[in-house]
Amino acid sequence: MRFLEGKAVVITGAGSGLGAAYARHTAKLGAELVLNDVERAAVEGVAGEIKAAGGKAVVSVGSVSAWDYAAELIAACVSAYGRIDGLVNNAGILRHGRITEMSERDLRAMLDVNTVGAAACASHAIKAMLQQDSHGSIVNVASGSQAGDIALGGYGASKAAVASLTYTWALELRDTKVRVNALSPLAHTAMAATNMQYLAQQSASREVVYTTLPAADVNAPAAAFLLSDNSIGINGQIVRIAGDELSFV
Image 1: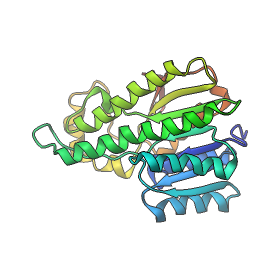
Image 2: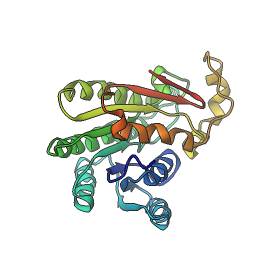
Image 3: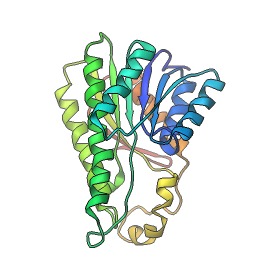
């Protein structure tokens, strides 16, 4: 069933990992995409795959941490497809460090991309969606690390801010046709691979221990559902995906 047929969707950080998985899956369901990444070759490769399979994908290269670029990104979707129906705020970076090791540069970089980037894209997307007489969906990407984890303080804080923004935007928009939710995914990606050296220490403090991580594709159906009209009425929720477990945070 192609339940995203005709939906114009922007996906940030779509050159690899979770973003690429969201792009491939939503394209199969009929979404018309604008794919963002800072790595041109990577995101053009994903777009090429989608177009070769008969899908629609436009590429926009730039950092979502720049407020003006975020405006250009959303405008590119409206220009290409005449509208914007969905946004997946997936772009993110990870810099490890305990509080005694954390640098100002790393902390600011994560906040700029993970938090400010999400806010910039959402702000411009929501303004455009409110001008349309149709339903719109913002899907932020949070993280289980928002609850705290060893060497993930800065990253977790940047994602906790995204969770808080999700709740706030949902409240602000509850009387409109625009809904705001978030995913808290779990997947084996290049970013996750950099965390493997800390996994044993992190697991010692968890009630649930992850010894292996699922493929990024496992998370894609939940993103597609939240983008689709099937999720109308779901607002202000964080959906946690951990292998074969699905829950609200």
